[in-house]
Length: 61
Image (spheres, rainbow, N blue to C red):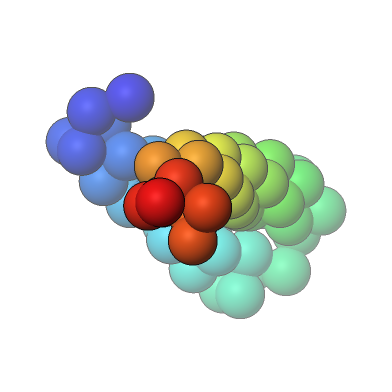
């Protein structure tokens, strides 16, 4: 996923959150939760990839 695609996803998530807080509808809540899950999953995947790249003390020797 490109940075632009991620930014679009976050934009959509924020729009869904705003819609939910404006309407308190079940549909808006579900859409918001789905988008939040996608963003959270992508952030966790990135964190895991970065952690895998970090050398450990034993890799340096």
